[in-house]
Image (cartoon, rainbow, N blue to C red; front, top):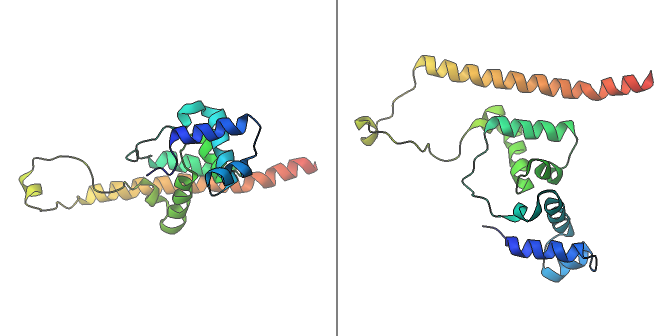
Length: 174
């Protein structure tokens, strides 16, 4: 559920842009928890216009590669959560925060897991009776191989990013 409607957010932003009130006074006036929320709305509005406040379907699911790209960009640019959300047009920065927690707590595989149950239909009589078919050994190995490749690529990029500041510092000293 969205706490503030898109119309409300747009009106607050327009009121701020008129320059008569600060973000702090507007937050107090409208009961918004933090003036930073208003500043984030202003940045969204400047970057994407009024459509940035449109309510997005909660069923939208980002794929694992996109999540990795977002987290790598955030780390590489030393960006805050709101800056990263703005850059990738993600409606709330808490989405990125949850990806970071998943990565830290459960590893890279967690970024590639889908929410809820798989949404595919089958006409298999075994499925209707509740019998679950185990994936074959080959399928298990292919999945494990794919996950290891992804993790390997992620670690390579992470290592390159960790060495990047040292390389920049060394070139400045010369």
